[in-house]
Length: 357
Ligand code: IPM
Ligand code: MN
Image (cartoon, rainbow, N blue to C red; front, side):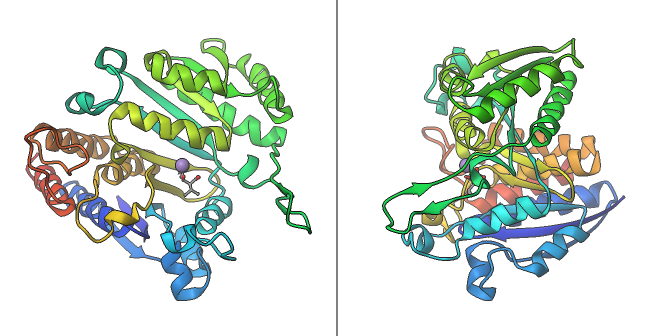
């Protein structure tokens, strides 16, 4: 098969972790005789520095021409500490999501046996937890207008907007995922307060009629946040709006034991994007210590979702699990008495495993 991918490393640790994910991708393609072509492009703070635009046109064109996008992370302290900056790296990510029509962000939360000890939660609560958070990605507070400040500067406002169409397409997708899994869907909202949430609930109740086999439940977001750590095994598929999903998936990563473990896929109208859920971790940039596993697992999602190559995806997941069993892991997940490996060492180990298995 021909695989044509765009590689967008971004900022901070992005380039280091993407390099390892790309190496794993190359190794899998060699093994299965897939013809891989890839091109790099700029996004985020590095794109602002070079072109003034955090999502340059050339990057968008490359994404549109590719079959999948492998993405690292964006963000830089230079901008975080300057609230008056007119152009921000995050705008690049939002522009990419909007322009590629990436309305669904799929974030699986799974536990890894060798990492159970790293979770702040009791192991009997989390062992076997396995759910999928489907976050709406191109609407809500992130994109609603008006957004800004009053003229005197003393009032600020954001707007949460959802159309029926936007809710329908994501909720339907979530039901379809639930059908492929354990047939349970949790719709998370704040329908006791928000008008948008009431419409989410109304639309979800209508769509539920088309999926009688799926057990549908509705939870307020505050309650969902609590249940996620008290009883994570009660979830199968969860669907929610943009901001709630952003917050809940960071919470979900804690269950796993490290933010450095969770991959994601963003899918929608055009090319899909595969990226770790963690950020650019600028403190670790260039130090060769960042955990590349979330990005390598994102590459596995790419094989499965963008190319329907399940065996290839499975081999990457097996390699990741094996690296943890062999204690070839970065410092964030190295257990007591385990010597931490570098980003590159973990990546190389995984490539060797892929070649040998
Ligand atoms: C994420 C990130 C982004 C978001 C930031 C970097 C804009 O936190 O992908 O979850 O808030 O969506
Ligand atoms: Mn986030």
